[in-house]
Image 1 (cartoon, rainbow, N blue to C red):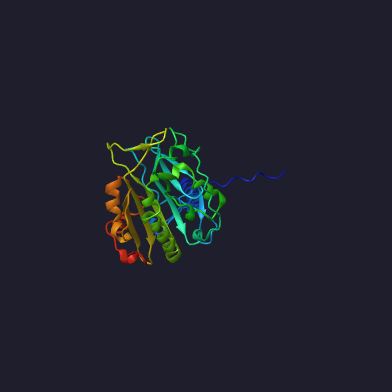
Image 2 (cartoon, helix red, strand yellow):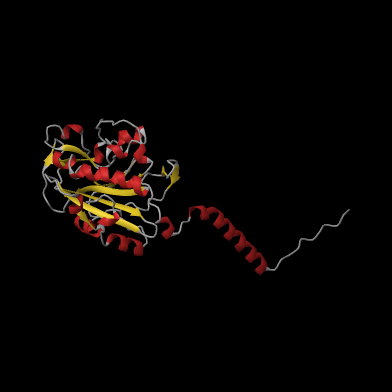
Length: 295
């Protein structure tokens, strides 16, 4: 019979050290793919889709929603995610607080035809929703926040941009005038600069009484905002706009503001997830010369 081999015993410090090395190695293998340096993440705007969005080649890429505005605690809010955009829905006004999306060069080349099928957004779970009948005969256009021409990259996105959660009452003068002009210029910028991050929506002041339309009582805003973020080779560049919901016809540069100014008017913190030194510098001023074609 062979003698049983005695197990070799190791000192306790050696055992503890070995366990620590194994644990650290496992942690790195699990978490390293998900860790991103904050400044590096800020170098490229990310999409607002739930888990995936088109990258520069139009292929899905995971995102962390770095550029979504901060959550709102001073008003009704339900975050609703669609294929081409994300919105913050306000059930009191039956409007979005904001709508956000990443407009890439590839996305501007979409070929899908305009849907024109306005529908209630059944993904909204909290409170009442607007219906198309609320707009009929109201004297106001069904004004897109994320425009149809920014959503031609897929049939689903085109259909979803006609959901009424993405729509606000706008005068025809604004919807077909300066608002449309800025939409078209933003697509030009996306083609020129590769990608533009966009957030827009109505300006709703606390405690102010607004006109409503339709049986469901959709609020008619008096002003609308839009803010844009893009990256240069060594910095981030922002610009904001506020339009009156009326008859205007001015050069777009006449509406240009810093993002800080738009934040003060709306009470929305747009780019708070960025490192503070990047956010503060980008939001504090506006330079129209950084935006080709803005006159």
